[in-house]
Length: 378
Ligand code: ADP
Ligand code: MG
Image (cartoon, rainbow, N blue to C red; front, side):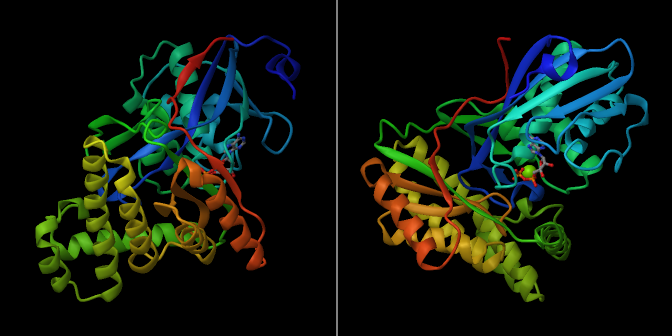
């Protein structure tokens, strides 16, 4: 693989990493100001950076469409550039927009985060860029500030109307923990998730599938949630009191909006239930809550797909404790909680189910909750 110096002719001044994530539970809640519970993956995107005396931003990714993308810092605007470079360029644009004084730089990325698999390679790319520039220019950015600037890049520069889950997970997760995050005000707590001691494994199953309508459907789900909140007279679905859910549902006339609301409100409760079980030292007991969450995403929120449903049903039939899709849906990945001794058999059963259905073999790996964004030695 080519190094920073191979590509740019100068050695890097520093090296930073930001991970991808799996969300244990709390899906499509972040843009409703609700709760999420992600863990950082051991996979991360690594950036090396050297500053330049001029105002050029030169970007290279070992995983991007070849070559170096050269940009003028003062000519960045949404849509220019497009493609993969929009993610890091959007971060620089967002930092400049906040009034930070940045100069030109050469930036080289490598990554082992699966791309487009619902494991947040985009947030890893954004957050590592924000962290690197923040460090090099002494901006003193907190994890919240990193996540906010990264989300702004994805929302306003790339044009993907995501919530802040992915960026906060990449910026703020801690090894051995899941991050219990209130997306309303970013208050959070690191919740120990000692899988190894409990004899558990968390499998990630990357189906390798992306369904083409995913982007439009995501925006439509957001709009349906906003319509639900408006019909109920609350700012966000987070504000629907869970003990008044039945009343709220009865007041909604549109059956689609009713199902969307039911998912979001019950999903926030599932996050709290999982956190309570983890706090009580009962990680094994979260399995059924995960599977319940999948049913809600499949039936009420309608963001699953046959491949994700197959992972969940095949894993369940093979003795998994629980399983659900993770990430936005319409393809991407699922998480499966298993007893350590059953991990092999459950993984094999999922692969066999895909083979029987004539589907391309998914990628299965065990994920250990890992560190959030950080500086690395050169
Ligand atoms: P996810 O975040 O689930 O992986 P997205 O569709 O949100 O999926 O983001 C994937 C896009 O992010 C890719 O199509 C590519 O443009 C960009 N990307 C992510 N990681 C890299 C990388 N290491 N190099 C180049 N582009 C990347
Ligand atoms: Mg993404």
